[in-house]
Length: 271
Image (cartoon, rainbow, N blue to C red; front, side, top):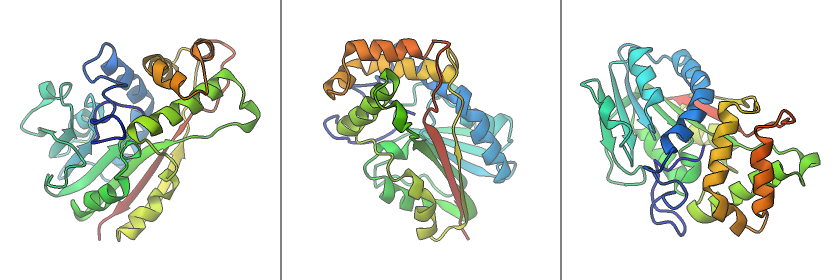
């Protein structure tokens, strides 16, 4: 959910997230892939249901390590995938005549990647202050009948657990992300309304909250994320090193019992 790979200018950061998550840093690809293990099955199920398959030209926004792009080619059998990211170090080796890697900043107003039958962006827009304007641009890149699929995080906090180390650390993370790189998940529930405002049809959405299992891939993702963000977490004043230590240890404990952040997927069709 927090990736160093796609974005643009951000408050105090210059380039999105580099001070927090260096693209070529140790274990960065592994951190991103841990989340992909959890969310890819849900994502690919939805993309297939929306018609991803032969005859389609697809744009994968914020392609990361290329797990969804590879699925579109190898499993869905689409004709072409354009994998767009600002850092394409993990994608270049995947390039084929059917998979075109584009190194670009999504916030670049001059970007013209073409027209697509499917555009998918996961855990990208929530990090960009220009997200509403970008949704307009993505919708304009759809071919007639094309689908736009947006997926971002939605927090589901438990009010009764507000003082626990896990909750305090998660809250500190969202505050740190907002103050440093501009992350804002408050508008994510409005994505269906935004798609309708763009004139898209058959608009719908779903919320998936994956199980947070001790030692599982999602728990490993959050532990690695918090460890990488320690200075920024402590700078919020919401936690100190001891609280973060306790929260990270809890993620591998058999006592773990949390409803972790969910993923909202919203989609619509160009008429």
